[in-house]
Image (tube, rainbow, N blue to C red; front, side, top):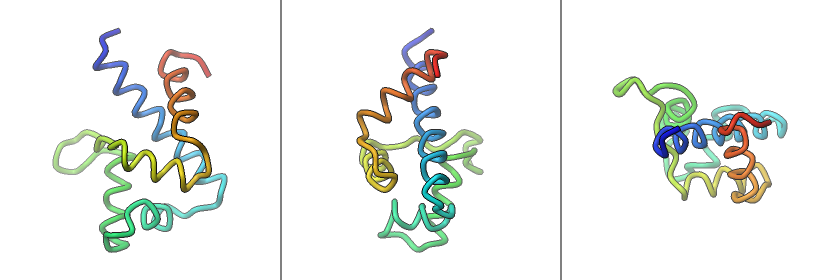
Length: 96
């Protein structure tokens, strides 16, 4: 597996883990997005979160997650970023 493909799989697995953890904490999608991007309007934050989770309308691909955004997401779900990344890497390797 190429390094680029693996890194994309890790990123997608990380987003899945964040979605799972946010749902466990009973965050609504828009509520979670507003916490991750408090500098944006609620509508813009929700749109960005949808672009990260699914496919962006302009590119047809999910939006990439920056390290800063990943750290905020991890903090909001109450887990260390490094821990979540290890889980994501294991999932990307086909382990659960």
